[in-house]
Amino acid sequence: MDTVQLERECQSYTRYLIGQAPTPYVIEKYSDFHQRIGAAANRDRFDCFLVSASARGPLWARLADSYASLWRKNSPVRSKLILTLALLECASPSFEDLDRFPRGGWLGVVVRLALGSLSYACALAASVALFAPVHLWMAVRER
Image (tube, rainbow, N blue to C red; front, top):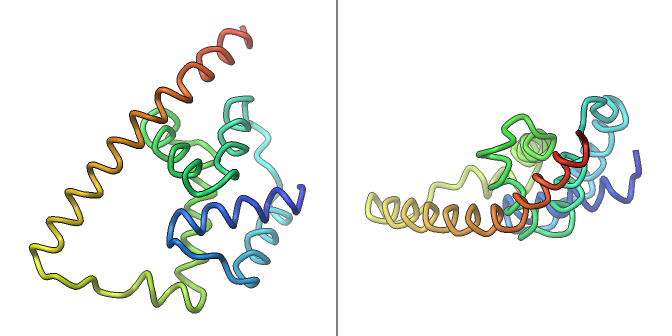
């Protein structure tokens, strides 16, 4: 696997998940995992496209994740995000940010849930507008 691409993915996913750059340890373990396990052999062209798009930055990672959460649940993008989150939960200092209890009580929780739901809905609408035509086009071309 291309180490530059893997580092871009890790950077993008980490910024999407926690809003910070990954530590060298997280990047090393992310690359190490991919080198040991290898690329998924059953990827189709659209999965490769989603992974490539998601590596462009945190906004693209969010759009690809939103699209895959509904229409590509077993996509490599989702697996890579889960791997990144697992690495962040086990590494310092990111685990501290992930384990921190948010302030604001139950009202703060409700507000965060409402804003998170609205953010997801907007990202999903944008991702469908961007990725659905490409998905359809690639599906037709593969036949």
